[in-house]
Amino acid sequence: MTQQTTPPLDRKRWWPTASEIADDVRTNLAAGDEDHALRMLIDGVNYLPDAHAAGRLGEALVEPESIGDSRWDALLAGAIRYRLHQSGLPAPRWTRKEPLDTFWWPAATWASQAYNDMAHTPAELLRLGIFLDDRAFTSA
Image (cartoon, rainbow, N blue to C red; front, side, top):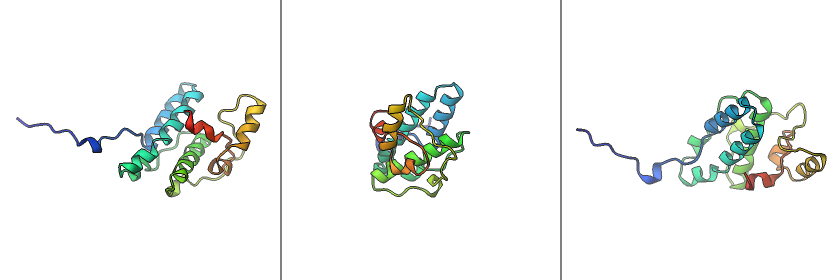
């Protein structure tokens, strides 16, 4: 009879990888739920410091397959760059994307919110032509 062992507590992973975040976003977009897709993206990216603290950031940052929409691919890459920059960590090369052809507001629903998003967008998203208030990263 073989005894089953469980990994040490510090080896259990509670944060999503970039691939898992992309999968969640893809699934929610396929279901027509862009709001939930955005929340899953932000929530997942916000766990990157936990992966770093556990010494497993490299595992979390393996380049994911495309979400299937260049805007969402750019948003994921830019959000990862932003969160890593906040933590003083370098971003992987794959997170460097070309700016979108057309500006995009993933969360704006009215004009005054769009202007507010423009004023408070992190540089990592601004350079991509994506406008999302940086406070969205604290309230996902």
